[in-house]
Length: 465
Image (cartoon, one colour):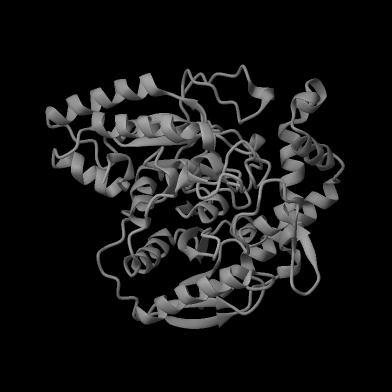
């Protein structure tokens, strides 16, 4: 196995055992970037020389007996909303073409302190305001959408051009591309990972989290990221937790909620079959399946957009007044529409969120996790705008992609997307696990237990199509 193919945990173990040096690992990933990046377009900026310097320093530290932990010498990509001092933070937009960060974001600083090596900044749908990341091709078929808005991060991990990456998630932007590219994506509890130094889309919905090859890898990265930062007003002051799942895959006594409503409505038949098989595997591991009704389903999408649209437009007010033509047309339309929403609309969305959080709290008191599809479809071809369902109805691709991921953002509960197979076209399918606030350890335990029952996953074919 070539170094760029290693999971984070495997790479860390090899580095600690001196079977692999950080320089070898980083060089392998950079070579992989040279090979497939021209076809996939995952990166805005590749920081090759900086990465090689950091890898040499990590190697020197390891030789001197200094161990920064499991991220020491491991290559990472950061979504280009995340500030790294001295580097551009473009948000994949012409509006930010000349912007350079003056200081590290909290998450970038924490990764550096843990020894991670930045190999580049990954593409996002412009300012994270979309679900496709049009600059980036899907790692399994570059003619299909990567998902968004953290499409570059998911494609980098799936194709071997980063061992792990960070994304942001406002309506599903970590989990959607993770599912469509066959990797693991974790949206933590709102406030668990600080957002200081991260460009905002919608401050009351934004989350930062890891995209990785395995569930164990996601836990390792979360350990490095979580913790209070007073510079983020939403940051939670919670005790440190080791989120890594243990070796035990016995789920006896664990209650898995299976939605009767919403999550299996208007879902592709192959997606539903794969997710239900995965849920059956959780039952085989000892879990007890409990049917649940998802509350307030008719208000989910309206509540999400009632929050996102005015918050995003407020953030971009100056840009819309001074450089409106620099925004991509799809994003500009959304920002202009947000300016038309009234204070009453926004307050009604806030009230709906408050009620929804309360109802979800009651539902989650009856189960330990909920298992459902991450997205109702596999990756559509680039340029497709609608999804047609067998009952004769249709919805936009963006609505389809966000529909099942939005509730976790509105309520702030943690959500984990885990690969559970492929459709007949070879495109990945994801299962979403949702849990109680600060219930990441349980989600990761369940996801890891499922993962251990499956064959090891290969990297995506990347530029093969």
